Image (tube, rainbow, N blue to C red; front, top):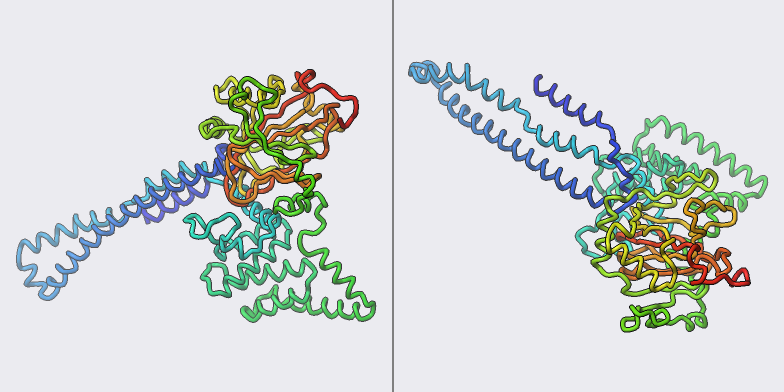
Length: 542
């Protein structure tokens, strides 16, 4: 009784723990998620220590039991003869009065204190439901953007993952079922169907699971019904009843689906509306109704829809660049490559060193916070589902590396960075992305950068501080351009025409990271201070 009460107390202690303020949207940054791996490794070590302690205790109990088993086997053959020896009589009294009490204490001894204590401490840093749901929705987003089927994701054979890598992972029936449930909770019946069907497929293939086929078929039939496919919903319901003939909800659904199908067929016969009904179903199923920009954005992320004619391509060049014979770059010019012509997007190769990138990450990582956007109505900074990353700001005075990077940007672009914003460092999370947006303030946002007092964002400089195995490109849906991340390079473009008018063709997005860890840092350069470095033109679009 003593042991059971103590165990219950330990369980209650764990269950009552609440996520603390230490939680910080883990799923939005792969960099921060790496810390969780070391936390988990520490817990595994602690758990193994607990197992060893339990095994040691059981070994002691086992040895005692074996010794007493042999002794009692001999003694019970001739009890009187055995106890006729005074030493045996004394030892019997001693064992029952003292030693069995020691065995009781040993059996009741709780060896889990160290593990439970460590788990309690570490639990405050665990991800919560928001993180789990966020990571699940990231998988669904990757599935849609890169047009991946559930089998590809479940098997772990993602584009960019080399066969045989030790960290390749697969999804179990429970994992697929959980993804379906999360989609279901958002009334996303399209993805519910896909993942419940995958769970069913793996069950049919013989995978052992704690999830029963009846529950999967129940979710599957309902999600299919919600998408208007009555015949398939009826098929799944019949299969469910073949497994569990007494399932009350399925029995009710069977009658309802049969009634609705009969009604539908009768209406089709009378009105000849079969084609219209089919069209309606096709519009219902899948991720239809997306904005054209969304489709263009996803196409570009997949490497489709690029709009660069051979003639325009022939006008793009690579060159050594010294920015009008800048003293620093006369003997060692930088490598410049034209990525796009309109708007002009330039990539600089080998523009930041490995040591500089590591130092920037080191400075930023402790300060990474969930990236926010400015609400266009209220002006309040808030998180958004379409921007999945964490960011930090680094000032020039904080470290010589940051100051040196800022100066390099000024020397190469010829623009004054004294009025620019601080260097922003960003690390993307699971399926990390930033959907199409402008960097500059539009005419309907006259107060976008009023507090800075430095005018609009005239240009953007973007460092890529990691290679990305798959996904993560910077795309420009308006013009059909895509720029792939390349570690140690930077891209640069003007957001404003020389007239100060915004260049709407610079609307861009960061594609979801499919495989890998994406680190970037960017510098937003403002108008103030550029009056003589980039003089205003007479024409609005000049």
